Length: 200
Ligand SMILES: Cc1cc2nc3c(=O)[nH]c(=O)nc-3n(C[C@H](O)[C@H](O)[C@H](O)COP(=O)(O)O)c2cc1C
Image (cartoon, rainbow, N blue to C red):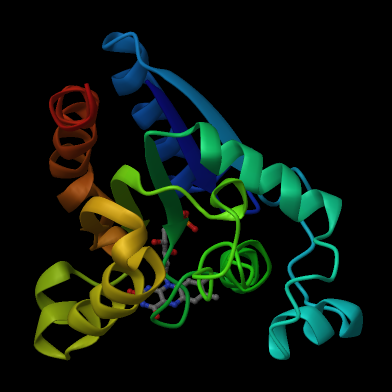
């Protein structure tokens, strides 16, 4: 049972980093094994270059996959659960995480893989969890339709059929942190147990 965390925030002084630390404690408490892809720390390249576009844009699956992308594929292939942790920036994930999807979800692997050899296809992951922090309160994000659109894009498109069970937790209201900090930490505390229930 292996958990892969895809973490995307540039600063350890951030609230999102605090959430990551709480999440790690919750997983450790349940003796769950996890690995973190810290996209900023890894300096993960998230711009697609022209050669890569040649492969992705024209679905030429015979062209090579870059090594850093292959490494991410290997991590995914070992995982039973993937947790994405990031702040909401302009009603979506930060560009760096968006670029992770652009490059790592390569054609022949994450989609358009009907003709691919079984070992070249992305495996179906048991549980996908998206945890994002947001400045606006959840109620406001729901009223203006942004919560629904974020869930639609992350859960229905980016996680899609690649995950059996999927969930998105919006930890909203961080503009007035004192009001939400306790609720958020209760939610994060319960995650280790939930993963055990879903994946073991
Ligand atoms: C560039 C940028 C864009 C942001 N856009 C949004 C947004 O569209 N909606 C929202 O609720 N909060 C937005 N926020 C607030 C962040 O979601 C909030 O700062 C984060 O959840 C918690 O802060 P952290 O950076 O300390 O982790 C934005 C913050 C930044 C820096």
